[in-house]
Amino acid sequence: MKVGVSFNPAPFLVWFKDYDRDKFIRDLIAGLTVAAVLVPQGMAYALLAGMSPIYGLYASFLPVAVAALFGSSRFLATGPVAMTALLSASAVQGLAEPGSQRWIELMAVLALMVGFIRLFVGLFKLGFVVELISTSVITGFISAGALVIALSQVGHFLGFKVVQTTHIYDVVVDIIQKIGQTNPYTLAIGVLAYAIIWLSRKVHPLVPGALLAVIITSLLSYYFQLKNFGVSIVGDVPQGIPGLHFPSVGFDTLTSLWGGAFVVAAFGLVEAVSIAKRLALQAGDKWDANQELIGQGLANIVAGIFKGFPVGGSFSRSALNFQLGAKSPMASVITASVIGLTLLLLAPAFYYLPKATLSAIVLSAVISLIRPQEIFKLYKINRMDGIIAGITFASVFFMDLWVALTLGTVISLGSFVYKTMYPRIMVLTRNPQSHTFINAEREKLPECPQILYIRPNMSVYYANAEYVYEYILQKAQERKKDRPLKYVLIDFEAVNYIDATGGQTLMRLFDELKRMGLEPALANIGCDVFPILDRLGFDKKVREDLIFDSKGQSITELFKKLDHEYCAKVCPYAVFKECYSVKPADFKPVINL
Image (tube, rainbow, N blue to C red; front, side, top):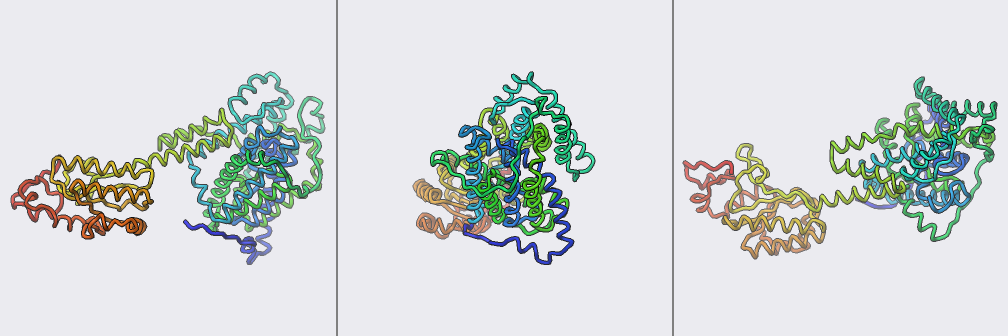
């Protein structure tokens, strides 16, 4: 692992070498198509973040271009994302009233915090940290998050207000209690919008169903004045480009936001990196994860100072860029330009847009993500992974989303650490048929009475060092009771790392073995492990002639030092081929115990 600072001020220049008219046309088509999807999606996802739809357009403007220009992927489409919007709302929940001026201010501050975290991670090449969020946690979280998103839109879809929380249980109870307040006109508009989006996908994936739903339902809302029938509409939408604004909050509020900011940043990193990596590999592009994180960080900083909220990489819009053959970040710059023109010229046209339509857009995007069956699949593959996914999913019923994601990650890391605390340690012997070294206890094969050959199958560090010490000592004590044990041969082939505690514990083990009248011997010490043992002075604990480079060498040399009279007259086994050199000619060894 190497950590250093790296920043390329103009990574986008590489895309414009040999840039020509044909490539621009491809970028233009991709940019316009993605913009047609982003306009309604951005407005819809703003509702998820607890903000007015116009803020979704603000977050879809400059951050989109900045992420593309300073990232490394020509396909990754940045902007408002359902999960990120919902996680952000979860992080701010309880600090302000959704939609209030303070809420908007906190969302901007959260975007800045997320941006600086991602920028720091990218600059210092720390992108590997995202791997700490396991697939099992992501699987459980996405299904639960999608369910929360779907439930949060039921109110807009049916025409009544639902309690503002990400706790599934509370939302379900509130919906059941208010189901009688359903507005049939709002429900009809929502169903129509959803049907338009669904049918558009059936006709062709590139048909902008969400945009068609916005246009058709807005016209119906205007023509029939549906607001008079209780249908909630977007209303006045400010016209113009967002101005520069530096949000400010108190230190106490800032402190309370850090936990949520780290979770939003981490989840967004996983999302963006996985999308960009997948599409880059499919296209055969060179790809830099840390540069991508720099782009994502700068995009969120820009979102924070231009009245936006945290943004991330969108898989659906990135897939569109890939499908349409975008040739450079210019495609996303064109998308951002279209959003800018929309803010300047078309903002008032959204006045009659029913909020039920925006809910239908959100529902159409997340319904397919509710896949609890994936948790059961994980359980069949690996029980612990399935349990972790299930706990993450279930915890969302009673916890804030960011807390549930944190809990799942902690449990996942905890289960991994627990497994490493009790590594598999094998007593080895030679298989008489294959002549390879295998697990003597599992296969019930005889061991050499004078050599205990043992191999830890994991690195030795502070959490498992004592277990390794006790295990090897116990095996040595057991065998010394009924046989003339002389050597304890420890094979380091699978030990890739030893920390100070692990090394010091091994020194204690060597001393204890010597006090028992046994000689420790070592084989296959790796180049990363040897310097640590050397600094601990292991050469004073283990004789130089008992340190070996390989299994074969260790057995050959140790056999020379054994009591051959015992081998010939008492030992009923022929564990090693060397044994036959001292056995009687008519000797028949015991093969199995």
